[in-house]
Length: 569
Image 1 (cartoon, helix red, strand yellow):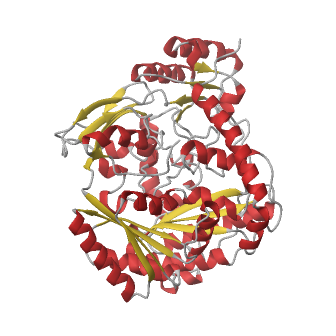
Image 2: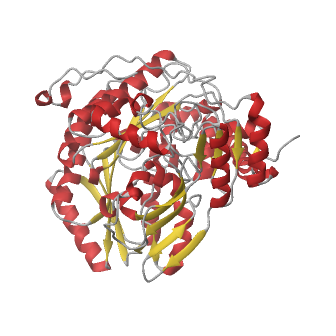
Image 3: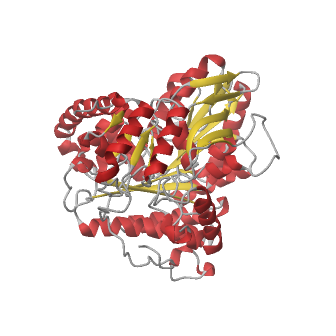
């Protein structure tokens, strides 16, 4: 019997095809100009397949608006990050096939019967194309060929309870899926199992205007939520890539460009409800703005990436929409100089809401992708908010700091249209990157260091990236020490795969050598697990493993993610 495919997947595929055709014509008509403007590009093969299609990349952008290396580095802390040597790469983008956990033939019919009883026949999908769609996020370079055995589309917490209980009954893995924008393989299914698509759960359940909080279901996107809140003069301040949902944002402990002022997801969630491995529904806290009652289960689940439970309800702190804002932009000779100004701005006490850094290659890509003529130099972007007079006064202070550090081309905008135009280039930066090498795959990694080490770490990382033949860019949330690299490579070229992995590995070890972290906001997933023991030590991982083992004794909740299983079972 043929099962109904989800409307969301069909819509994505339809937009994908339509935009791919348009994007293909655009690239074909401008290929000569691109070749002239891009230096040192297109070395080696450009790859093939759906992940290597620039049209597909464009299709995802149209739809969403966007988005083992265990050896220690040979260095001492006193030598500084400049002397860091890359450990040898022992990992490639290999497939993981036929891993344990796949639903056996003798129980599949019983499992399907229970799932259909829970969700209805039309929301239990065994179509191969639909299952494949849920096996790999749009934006991740990780390769896992195993696909889920079943995809379900619950509409309520009660249905999720029934699904989790059915999976526990048959010892089948459970993997939550929503926006599909994660970068470290969080929603991939190396052990197959049941993928739970949360996109049918996107209600705003309660809005408390006087308390400035809102209770939502996990499938609602942050952009959708802010559209809902705007008429009330409120907004939710975290802004990761378009397409991200509140549940996924909680699961990965995301942040975004405004974390420098408002904090990360852990600072903006008041309470959660989650379904744990045995089917219980856990409420982590009351709706009060603060509480000292018991263990902080809210923070335990935030960042757990579905390995401890499936989030079904979130209570969020809200903020008032600022009366006025100013967006400013300026240029520098190096990323180190730009980072130094970001640090000086934070030290000055100026209350910025955003401080974003884009290197010269990122600005080149933005110009090509958007037909702009911004200076192709390391660039800082600021957003300052408050009353109109306050925002302008703080902008003047920032300008003086920039000038004192030899920054140039300081411009700012305070009209809605001009601000939108300036900020648009940052929000679309990731997708602009692909014009530097049409047809490439992107390896995106992020690290975060103490603010005092940002200039050193980003300068050293830039030097290492410049030594590579692979096109790459750096983008940073410079106000809190978090920066990203995007490396374009051909996944069919083993040497390029190795080089891209080496670059990511080098950046992580550089960050760790400066008291930083292997990931500031992308999360762990399957990609950053190998660094946790070096960053946190085995004792911390043993504690995490104990928590995982107690809450999920059969290792069914998004297995193979976050904590290496040797510490859990």
